[in-house]
Image 1 (spheres, helix red, strand yellow):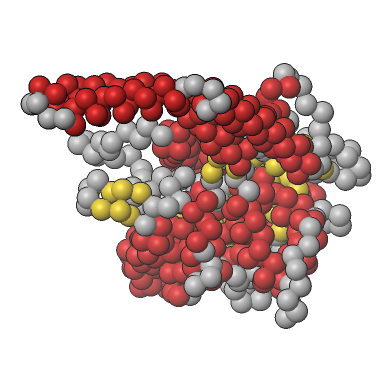
Image 2 (cartoon, rainbow, N blue to C red; image 1 turned 180 degrees about the vertical axis):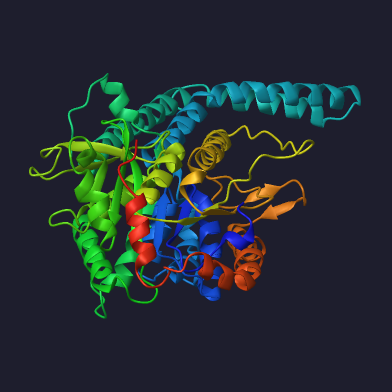
Length: 491
């Protein structure tokens, strides 16, 4: 972390929110503390689940993350990542089919218990022994004779099998109907039956609902389609830029088809011109989207949905571009990429940012003797992979691009047992208790004060006068010109 005396509230400052899934609760706590302390932020940037918090914060709606009915307080957030309904129902149907098929075997296996008990009772000269054995034998013979189990079991098994096939076909049809816009798919038909195993549609819905609550106005209008919400959001943001609590926005998601990270941004002048127009030639048009431009605002919520799509196991979000855009009406697949923090830093420099506050719930490099138990579930394995990728990428980004900024400040937990996919909380071995998601939110609030507000902002107050003397142009427009002079095309 940069020493406290280097911080200045007069510099153009960006807040960067990084993470996946449950780690968004940590963002909520940090944002609550920053808002309470009145920290000045010019730009909010996000990737992954941080993109949702960035959009809410941009229009002064961060409270929608932590209040009583906020995104991270709602009970349905626990089901943000689950197996696809088709797989869940098919698994129950398959379990029922297996149960039907093993009923005869269970009846015979019961004899391994009945006959030894009957033998012991007979040795003890008790009349219950022969009665137990003879009764069991007669019961098994009756159950296995027609028209009992030999007739009923095949019918029940066939009904369950038909139900299983129907579930798979219905799931395939539902997936094909929901996936819009559509693209031609290649591969065996059986892959379309199972599809992507993880259902990641809950978080996009929760963030879209929260955004709509903020921009819809006083009337309780039902949330419209994604494009309409995106347009309303951008219109609200552009109309209020410069007002207290409203910030510029920068989102990053990954285009799987172009194999590149894509930035969507709403910036004020003169940064907007330098960020987009001066670098609009060639392929740059494909990786930087001016959401405030005519016809582009509808992509705001689409970019968010792409950033919220995990890179493994779930369906990517499909975005159909306008015929007049760079992609000429194509439908492209978007998702998150933890290592995209490198692109976030590059784009913030291009947007004239001088100091950066980075927030992420992933714990940095641990000390010796800090090994945790290895999670064996698919969610734990994916969470470990995503967290390691993000942590390593952030370290590389600070090393590679730290010289671009006058200060980089990090807020991150020293200890966090909650993984990206632990939406219901996690067991904390260090304290031998369950660690709920609400506690991760509180931890973010406390860390913001301990790691940034008190030591950096509070500790730098006595140095602000010296900084103003060192940079006499601050506040009168000269520093802004200096920022623009130093900001140019990357690479």
